[in-house]
Image 1 (cartoon, rainbow, N blue to C red):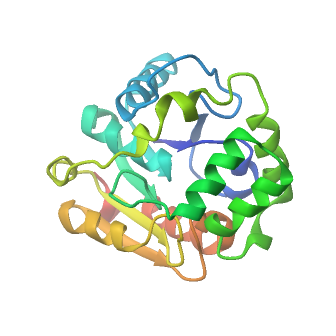
Image 2: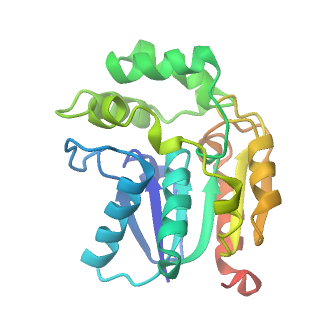
Length: 240
């Protein structure tokens, strides 16, 4: 079974997605990283439809889906719109569950997208990591490089946050896939309580909080993160 990772930047995975033993189809979502950056709505429906086209192009009929932050919001929408194409679902500090970023974190995000630099990147790092020193220097450099590329503002300015708008509880309750919700216990962007609220209405979901981890537990606690993901994927009792 393929594992599709939905995230906003490509090189993070080269160091942190240590998911050996699983065949992986990995993608930068449209509008980010090295993918095309067209003029578009960049809302959840748009991303989910694009992801379906990606499946069709690669002749993937069904896969496990792992989504981080905004990628979690897209994974949720994809599971709602195309449930027959999803096996297991993994959400990491997911968007679209009702959380709102605190004002300073929002300012940091805006500055990083409009004026990408080492300074704005490091300012924002304090809101996405429990310990900013855990950030891979290559990830920081690559993030700045990508944010300076042609079309880099399209997803940010044209989407205007619609990709992480709240998904109603009634829709979450219709997601019957075996789901693992991972959350950094110290997430300053999206507090862990929102993961707990989602699990309460999703019939086959389990919440796992990682201590001393922020919005990116894969960077703060990579060994723990990779183990819980692999255990979930390899456990036959969590088969759909």
